[in-house]
Length: 611
Image (cartoon, rainbow, N blue to C red; front, side, top):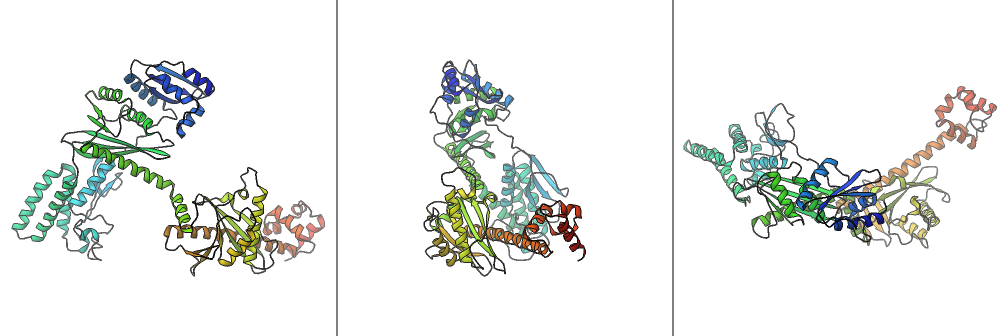
């Protein structure tokens, strides 16, 4: 069906709750949804002019038919939707992948044991506590144990590194006992590790009681150093515990959920509180969608009605439109009352804010993972004074060799990354000798002419693209020569800069067309970025120059044979690829080369065997 036909069909649906199933041309189910009023929900997909995000737009483009299942209530529709999504896993529904895994607390078996979090039991020479289903909880436990018992978290090895160097900052701020100083007895250290294990296995209350008893015993036997160390451990436990926000009543179990969105993704962050303590954090990121409200409505039933543990309370940053049906479905699945609500004030509202902050932070990390180059381009634009980040950068370098010939390499960086399909090479046609300024001017003049030849044409050829920034390997001379060459062309307004190297062949500064020298070494990211462009351009130009030199050396060895001129040498190289292959060729194989007759073939054959 066409979109118009689908829209007309949707207008005939009832204003009743139910589930709708959208299929593509191959009759594959591509989306399953629920609606309080089927006609309103389904028709909005196909009504002209209704805006949608990227995912929904793509789904609509593949839609060919739809079916509906009318339900008695919104609750029934919600439960049916969850079961159908689980059964069919449609392409355009959010599909929650199980990111759970088992985690362990690892204690190495050695003279000076170390405590750490581990994802696998892969060390036979270690003891493991677990498994735990939450890596978040394991990391929290290990960090807490290290803080409470002043255990080292550095990479130093004991006893090899005892007494070597000064203790690190953690020792000086009271977060480590300073084992590396060599002043902590092994027995005291091992006791601290044992205490940490005891705390992880049995909790804080028992270990505090035991530590107080040990501190008093040490003081009675006048072992003041041990007593002071245990005192510091007790103080650390008390301080860290006081700083933890346990805002829920003992025995309370609650999930706190918040959603955050950007222009390209939405994140759901879940904080799990059990027995009044934060025990786990989970985050789900969905790309190619910006509709937070719809994702919230779709996410919650899928998350809870497909096997996830349902707590007594679910606190949300905002209630979905079907929250009452969701609450009923969760209660029925749990077999007990469940409260779904949006806290307006108080401690739980603060927890919702914390969940939202986690969602925003996760999106920030996701964005950073994909836009590092974007950030570099923005910084580059700022330092060079460009009106906007340069999406297409072209860089040029001249390479020449002793006998006076020159070539130029052109590399392209698109969105901060090398675009090798856009690389080009130039052999000088008008420049005699090794004149870098004139060679650069000829190259850019030809580049501008190529761009002009594609004017108005749609093509993938790199020459048809107008760059946002041109970089030249060289200083003022190269910049002025190219500036003059581009005058009056379509590339005249493209920002133009030279890249100047220091004594270590690293990019020291950028030379602007007005002779301004812009230091970039103080901008670490830009320095690395521009240096990588200059290095890549130099590499590419040199490789092309070496190829040309090799071709000429091959051709010269062949043209030394009587009767073999440049044309015959070129034909031989095209056929055999290497001079070695020509040398090893039989007389019959030489005769097969176009333009090589039997007499010349015999001459070539004999010349290689008489040398």
